[in-house]
Structure formats: structure tokens, C-alpha cells
Image (tube, rainbow, N blue to C red):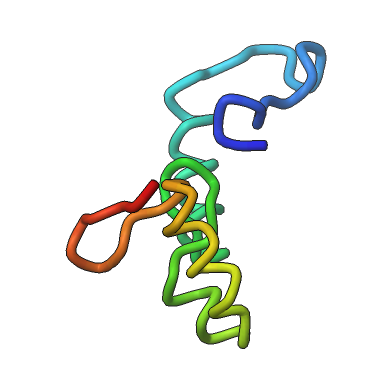
Length: 72
């Protein structure tokens, strides 16, 4: 799953405001330590002791390292 999958149900709010929804999702991702695509950052994974997951993500091209490089 990623950002494209993150949507409230169509009937969640009576009046939809896509700009506000985007801002809320951006703030939520930042709070969680995720990038703008909804993937945990390397720093977040490493802090949680999941450095092997960040290495796997880097190898599969699912995230970039601190220099902006991705492998895979």
C-alpha cells in the first residue's frame, strides 16, 4: 500500500476538500516518520531496529538512501 491507496470513504465527509485532505495526510506521514509516499524512512526503520527492512527496501528500489540513491 502507498499514498495512492490512502483515501477516506466517499461518504466520510459531507463536503470534501482535497487540499485539506492532502495536508492532513502529509502531516500524518511526517508524524509517523514516513516519506510522502507512505513508506517508512530509513531513519525511522533503523531507529526501530528494523535496519534489515531498510536495506531490503533500498535493494528493491522502494526507498532512497540519504544521498538520494536507490538500488534495484
